[in-house]
Image (tube, rainbow, N blue to C red; front, side):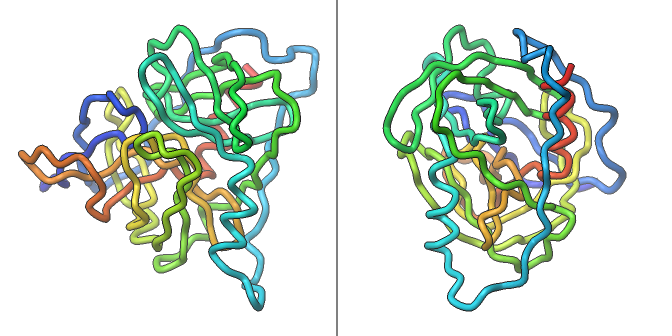
Length: 256
């Protein structure tokens, strides 16, 4: 069965490339994960709300969507590696990619204000390339989670993060495919990914893919690269973990 071009994880500046194959078939298997630290065990289990995509409003613009999202996006510094992440609730939880923080002894977040705060790892699901961090910092801006099931091919999307360490970078594109069967994560299971032509580069991993209303619809994770070439930048083919799957995994990691 034919395979897609090789891809590299988009977030960790020093991460090695991974192969991503496009295959027919179902979704990945059961959610697995690793729990770290103490995540407010006396609190009620966290359930992340999701919003339906609203009807397009007159005067809505990419600039408005970016302005609404940027305060909730952070740059993740994990040892010598860098990536991106975003705030998901009022408890200080931040989502990023597992490969951004793997093997890191210390983690810090650079907020949209430029302030640097420390963070700890709450849980990691390497098979689905997701991690949850937690910070004690106050004044964070949680982002609104949308529904990836409502995405359509051609919908406008924004990728927001810190490509090549350039914090607060916004790129725009469209949804190229909503159900691309792909392999990423440490176990190589088949997973459904959102494919986009919004520019995603090393440092973007873990950052949000958002719709025109500023709702998170995916987690930017990987980019395709040309076979046998040294070029590792964007070639118009990026992949994001759908937010519907992210929500289920993140809730399990936090509530474990």
